[in-house]
Image (cartoon, rainbow, N blue to C red; front, side, top):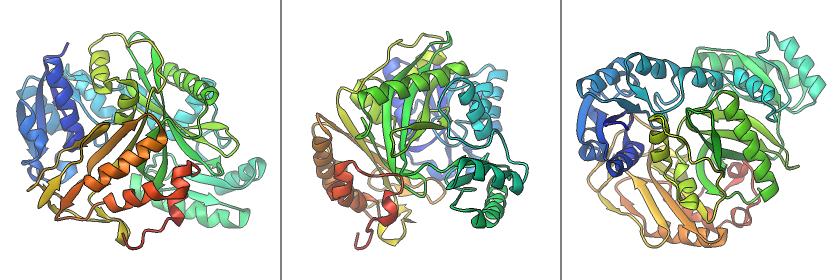
Length: 447
């Protein structure tokens, strides 16, 4: 087992990893930018190293600075958390070259899944259902038009190096194709330095369902059931729940086995998720694989009584996985609390927290790094807390979540708490009958 782990991240996920390391008797090293010198992950780690100024490029994305911090503290492993360098193949490779264990996927595995066209081809070869579309990148707009005619409109063009909804365009008929093609190439080239596009059949009334998987160094893979991540705004998740209201035991079994096939095809090591779109007919299609821990991993932990961070560390240390597939025994939901103003287009609201009270009680878990007097910097992601609630039924979870959100007091900044409270009262959400487009018609006024 590792003696010392450096956490190459910040905020609540860094604090989350530190807590599990402490329970396992492993020393920790926090890294931080000058903007994060007062963050709790810096205070609670055994050691802390400043790695640069506030900009991510000069701190949390600086591989030389992070490797240097690991070397001067004699860390024998690095946990990347999520975001930043967590899915950076070059970082995984460099860690290996320096004799530091990267707690996550290998560089080869990250490369397999990092390029969407390659990932799709890999999953198709493994027998995982994929959305009909191009076999690889499109060479020309004419090729795209011909394929769209073959598989039928509507279709969607996507940036191969994309994320966060950038470089994507839905095309309803051939007359829209040229403009959508040009716009997607321009946007993806500017955002990612890669304007390669591929095309897929557009899935109607989709649900975003992901399967949590864990693989070890011995070629074994298990799954820990599904999470429904369909409540999104501009392709950014706001609420996640498990089990999904639309997933039957039969569908769960099929999706779980497909996820295991996909992860096994690349010899996957560590915790990751296979993400699917489920259409209105109940068919599911591979979308992408995230080769890291997810923001929403706590809801899986709550319904399976299984510490995913601990499992990540054990697998990275060469220990076998538990070897069994998990089925949820409870219901759980997570609301992401962001420092944003939902009444004004979710405008960022950094600043000083003047008053803070976290909710509590049975079935309520808070993952956060903030405290009264803490100043939220404007340089990073706006998420400041996660409210995770579990219970015996979905109805009980929603009632408990609303109660917890009403107890959550945070002053000095705007947050998304009012939006979440309204969502818990929304009949469409309560029914479980929603898609990834649900918030496009949601009433955000007066929040």
